[in-house]
Image 1 (cartoon, rainbow, N blue to C red):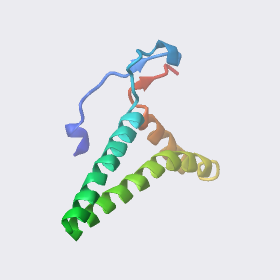
Image 2: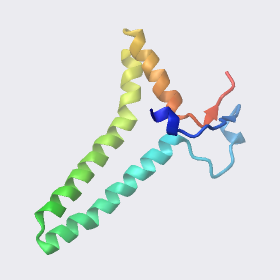
Image 3: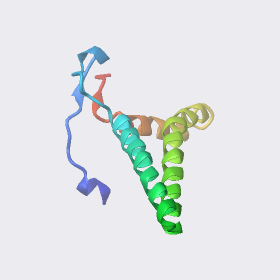
Image 4: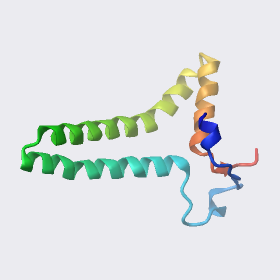
Length: 111
């Protein structure tokens, strides 16, 4: 179902990172940037909830902030951990390679 809504793209063929245009950002960078933006936007929600004494806003802001922190840690740790475990269980290593290729989907190293 999700593949139906995905846009078709052509990866950028490169041999080194110097060939990329200066404004290029891979998928993992865009995901991290959006998560950090969500974390910063949750702070005014927490402050507004505490000023207005609305516990639902405070809870919502803290929940979003915790989600952002968990997602950022997972985005940086999970692929490395899966690669490490993949030495003993090859199917986990295959999933790690698929995850890496998805996170850097916009690049084609031409291997």
